[in-house]
Length: 80
Image 1 (cartoon, rainbow, N blue to C red):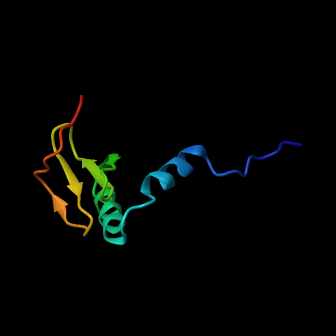
Image 2: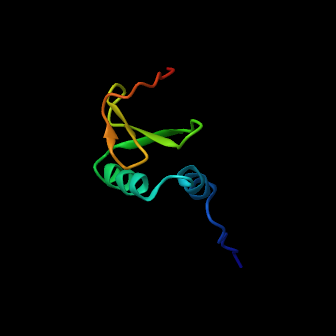
């Protein structure tokens, strides 16, 4: 008899934890962008509110602000 592991995969938990703390508008925009091919790279967590950073290509990235607006020219520095 083979036992099946029914626990939630660690990757699912990690993704859910990363999205905790986002506002409802940020989460909605993030879902919409991911459906259109953008990838969540990381979530910057400054003192005020978390800011998801999404990439379409290595040089094409945006930041999703607290109100759900997309900042196409963010003033954040990226390390490579």
